[in-house]
Every structure is written in C-alpha cells, then in structure tokens.
Image 1 (tube, helix red, strand yellow):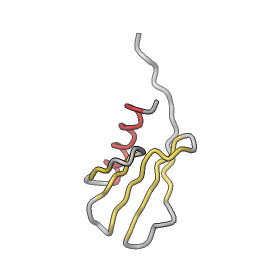
Image 2 (cartoon, one colour):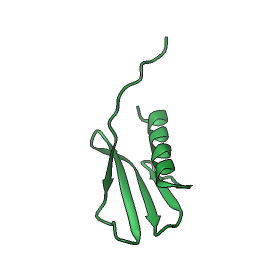
Image 3 (tube, helix red, strand yellow):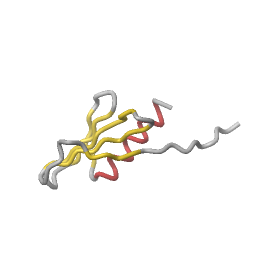
Length: 76
C-alpha cells in the first residue's frame, strides 16, 4: 500500500543577520529550524542543513528544494 501525502507547512523566515549585501533565510517546520540559506550579494547560495552539513545551490529556490528533500528523506 502506498503512503498518503501529508500536507506540511514550511515557513521561510528572514533572520536578524540580513543586510543589503547578505541574505539569510531559515526554513521552519512545526517550530523547528530544518535548514538555512545564505547568500552574499549575487554570489553562490550556501545551504546549511539541520545536521550542519553544507552544500552550494544555484539559486535560493533550489536551496529551499534541497532542504525540503533532506527533511522528507530523514526527518518525517
């Protein structure tokens, strides 16, 4: 039998470290931070997972997708 898809709300919050040159976003599910996305100016996007592992993404959207995939694989 196949599992049913669950609806999970993901919040994307800006952190206090945001400036004009630096962007930092937190992804939150059920009041738990599941990852962060960081970018300097228009440079590469760094994705930090809950485990502390870091990875580079081409865009903020791709970074969000990577964090959600990691969460779905290991945390649900």
